[in-house]
Length: 184
Image 1 (cartoon, one colour):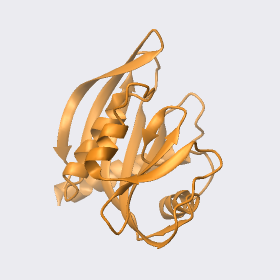
Image 2 (image 1 turned 180 degrees about the vertical axis):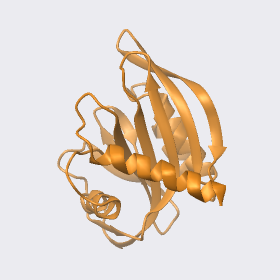
Image 3 (image 1 turned 60 degrees about the vertical axis):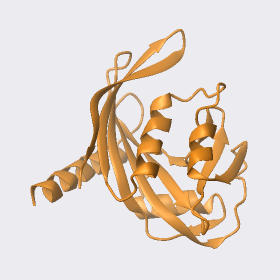
Image 4 (image 1 turned 90 degrees about the horizontal axis):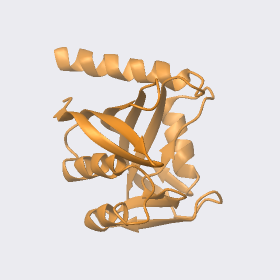
C-alpha cells in the first residue's frame, strides 16, 4: 500500500510539472519505449543522436493522449502505455529539477514512417538499440542511454533513480545520486 501511495504521489507531482510552463521551471519529459511484433524497440535519430521518442510540451493534454499523439507522429497506433520508470534530473548548472517519465507499449497497427522533424527512425534489437545510443557522435547525456538500458533489461519492474547533471565545455556528464531502485 505504501508503494502504491508513493507511486501515486510521484505521478501526481509529475503531472503538476507536466502542466506547467517549461521556461525556467521544472518540467517533465515523457519517453516512449515502443516494441514491435519482433520485440524490437523504436529509436528516433535527432540532432542529439539515437534515442527513444520523447514528448515535451506545455499544452493541455492527458498523458495517454500525448503519448498516442507521439506514436502517431511515426504513423503507429499503440497499446495502452504502461509506466516503466520515473527519474529525477538535478543540475549543478541550472536551478531546476526535471522529471523523466518512461512508458512502454507495443504497436497494434501502422507502418513506421520517419516524422519530418526527425533525421531517421528505425527498429532495433535491444542490444543494437543500446549500441546506437552509445555512438561516439551522441550529444545526448549518456544517462538517457543508461536509464533506457535499465528499463529494457528489466521491463517487469517500474524503476526510479536520481541523477546530477554537470556541464563542462558544453558537454553534459552525470553522476548517480540515487541508484536505480524498484518503485514496484
